[in-house]
Length: 416
Ligand code: GLU
Image 1 (cartoon, helix red, strand yellow):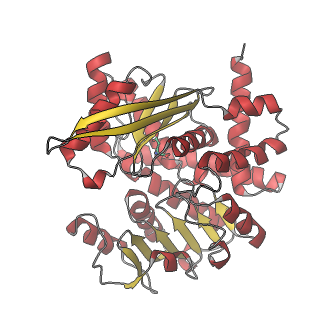
Image 2: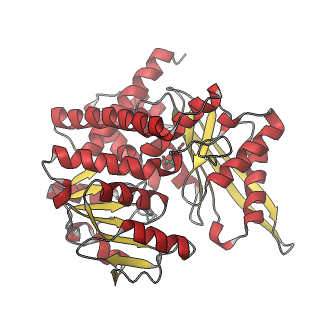
C-alpha cells in the first residue's frame, strides 16, 4: 500500500492535476471534480463464531455521478482505510469514463483479512455492512462489485440483503455467481482485458507476441486469467507469483499446469516445482519484455524504479506505481499502461451484467467476449491517439480522456 509520505488520494490527485493543466481546467472545476460527493463510514459490530464481539469499520466513498450511477468494488483487506478507498473511488470515476461507460465512480472497503475468518463470519460482516449502507446504494445510484478480498459469493449476499429492504433487484450489485444472476465471462474479464491490452500495445510498439517474455506478479483472479490469455496469444509467461513467492522458468511456464496446482493446493502456488523459486522482488526486476503487477498497490517505488528492467509495464492492479516511480519510468522511457485503462475490463463486464439484469436477458460467453473486445479496443485507440497527439504518457492521456468526459457531462448536466 502507499506509504504515509504522500497519501493515496494525493497521489491520484497529482495525475489529475497534470492532466487538468493540459485541459486548461479552471481551479473551481478541479475542486468540483476532485471532491467526493459522499463519504460513508459505518460501524460494523459482528458476533464471531466463538461468541466474541468484533467491531469493524466499513467505508463507501461515492466520488462522482456526472456520467451515471456510481460504480466500484468492495475491498476486504486489513490495510483498508478511508484515504485509500477515497483514492480508489476517484480512480473508478476516471476508469469508467476512459472506457466510456454510463457510470460514475465509487469504492467500498472493510478493514478485515477475509482469510482469517470463517465463511459464516464473512457473511455476517457483509450483511451487517449492507444494513448500514442499503439506503445509499442501488441500481440507479451506486452499484458495488468484487475487489481485492471479496468475490461472487459476497455479491450474492449483498443482493439478498439489499432485497430484504428494497425488493428483488439483481442489478444492485455485479460480479454475482453465474448461476445466481451473474454473467459468464465476468470473472475472467479483468485478466482477459489485461491480455487484450497487452497484445494491442505490443502491436503498436512493433513487437511480436511470440518474441515476448512476460512476468506477472500475483496469480489471483486477474493475474491467472491474464497469464492464460497471453499464453494463448503466443507470449511466453516466464514468471508468476503469489504470497508464497515467485516461480521462474526461462522457457515459459505452462499456465494450465500452474492453474491445476492452484486448484489442488487451496488456491496457493506454494510447492510449485515446475519452475525455479524466486522472490517477489526478484520477479519485479527480471529482464523480461513485459511486466504485469497484478497484486497489491504501491509495488514500484523510488527505491526500486531504477532497477526495473522490463520496457513495458501493464498495471493490472490498482495503483501499483507510486508517483515518484512513475516519474522515473517516464524519464527512463518505459511504456506504462495505466491502471485506469489496463484493468478496466472488469468494470466493463460488470456493465454488461448490469444491463442484462435490467433487461432480464442473458448473453452467452461469446457475445460477452466480443463486446468486451469492442469496448476495450475503442478505449485503447482513444488513449493511444491522445498520447501521440499531445505527446504525453499513456497515463496522462487516459486521465485527460476520463476527465474531459466527466467535465463535459458535469457542465451539460448543469451545476446550479
Ligand atoms: N473492483 C474492480 C475495479 O477496480 C471492478 C469494479 C466493478 O466491476 O464495478 O475496477
